[in-house]
Image (cartoon, rainbow, N blue to C red):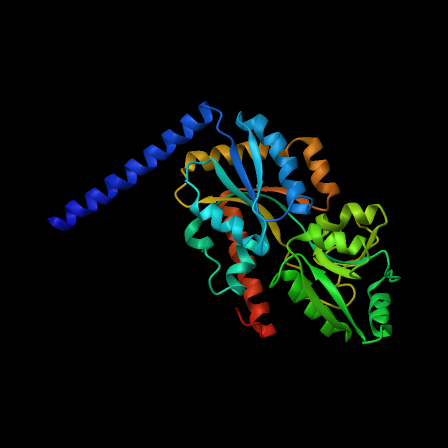
Length: 328
């Protein structure tokens, strides 16, 4: 009898909390409380630019201000921890790519969050590929040129910038070096923006990051993207070969961008945000802006995004284990 009463009480508490959260969400929206979009990287990088494009249009669909809040540091870990602590009322979401959600839990013993238990998928909106780019001060115009240039340096080694430590770009630097017999040393930054600043200043000769991080400076001739990952050449970079074409296969599974919310966020709030995002992605100007940045735009519902995140994490868990990497 006691067990039955306890069970009923737990159900009553859960129902009450859910109703209160939905009521709070409705009240907040009615009062114009802004929706916060947490971004784990500094202003000026690719992820920040994407967030601001979407936020500008989401405010029209949601009927409330949508504010981008940069919580930069630790490869998105600080922003993810902030999401975990946020009230699950539908007014806080995290815009993230694969690194924070799928990779950090594989390379950190205690990241301070567990995506499977602390977050819920809201919606995905794009996939992208990573790329190797060289700075304007590096004479290389191809991967073979770059390898030859590295070997010509006095110590026969070169630093390659990456947006975050223990990230997919770091593992790619290692694999690229092994493939081409080049001594490449990954140098982690606090996001792509400071890495790009050093590349533009010729403080570092190359970097590995997402195409959206490089594309504007590539178009301006300030850096040169010389190879991309993924299974096919990118529409915005038709003359740039894939690493698979160059003999480095096994990296065809492309990363993703999506929105995540704290666990316990009412389904009504998730559906409302997802519906608004779908309408934003249908706008020709939004699709054009994101496509020109090197994204493959496509709406993913909550379940589809969650499945993609799980599959991507499984793929990289094998790669990371094979590399011999030890979580700090």
